[in-house]
Length: 235
Length: 294
Image 1 (spheres, helix red, strand yellow):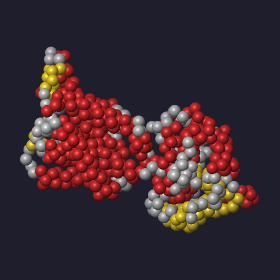
Image 2 (cartoon, chains in turn orange, blue):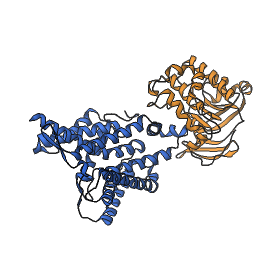
Image 3 (tube, helix red, strand yellow):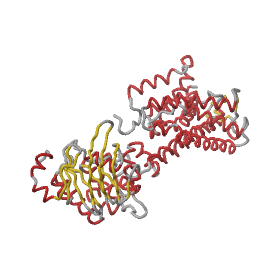
Image 4 (cartoon, one colour):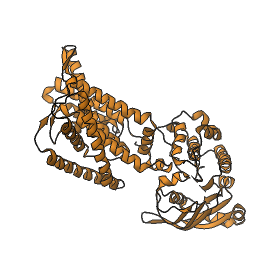
């Protein structure tokens, strides 16, 4: 599905990612954990080509993405939910979801709004509201719903639990895992919330100052307590 | 007396306001989406006016030939907009706005040079089409039919743009690109294409306005300058890039200017600057500020 080899990413003069390699099999669900500033967001934006200058190989569905611009990558089925959600405030919840149709294609038609709202019951009563009238948690739900509506092949989630109430985090974990399983969506989740990452994914990478310092499944991660203590701030 | 004078002021003010709006619409559209101030906007208005004049001559035979000439001028200037975007503006997408001001100022000088080369430096005048050439009596004052035509044209152009921006999907997408181009692209919207379409639309509006406002003035290289200043003021008062705000600001400026000329003729032109100063203090981000501004 996605194979990254020796990816280096830069913002201006700053060298953010150093020789990062990562692999997601079709239908696979993978987390990237790391502290603030480890390069997690830069990794996602390098995959979508929407920010940093990146060098290295990014192969998606066995096709090298090269210089493909960011909006075309979206149309190839890569959906990114950014950390700051970026809901459009001038249109309604329903229209925000419909807008995702641009990321769909003939062989992957967009999911109808009604079906998305079934998946995200929290959004059902808000469908006529404008994006600017939603709370943080509602905006996060909408951001994920909007990404799913494009029927992506690969979903990139950037710290979706940040600032959310615990009960919403649980609801979001249940929704993300079930949708990815049922729609056959591969997931790359960037998180600091280990509980959420464990719920949603089966393999993980740990990133520290732009380098991959751990790769494996959750059992191996749990067996190596020093990884958590050394590279992740959270308990 | 005061009542009939007030009606006169109001109608003339509306006509001026709508003329300002016809010029300002394209200016604010491109500012809203590309965040650039096109200093050459007036030059393309001027080219539109000359093009329409070349088609229709000094005495338009009918309303249809007059409107047709305006539409053709709009189309041709729209094509010039496409070329300008490809040759000049796409190179300026990522640079500081100072460069854009200098580049579009240079473009303005270039256009004026080309226009002098093609049409010469003689002055021309154009009559309104016969259907709107008579004066109409409203109350005790007379208003030219062409004045009412300009008001109607401004209202129609506003209604069309407002419908596109607020009712149609293409407008919702344009506003999405205006608010957050990065996220729009992340959802798969072809952002570079939307920017190019906006430039074409803005230029086409300038050219069309040039054709429609031809009978209001002497046609020369400076034909746009009388409207352009007010249009810039309206774009600022309206909230940089907001069509509705610009429309309201144009009406305010037009009526204020007209009242100024009628009731305080000795202080001609001063009132719009007072209005501008008041708005800059009272609403520094404009009547309808763009989302994301503080």
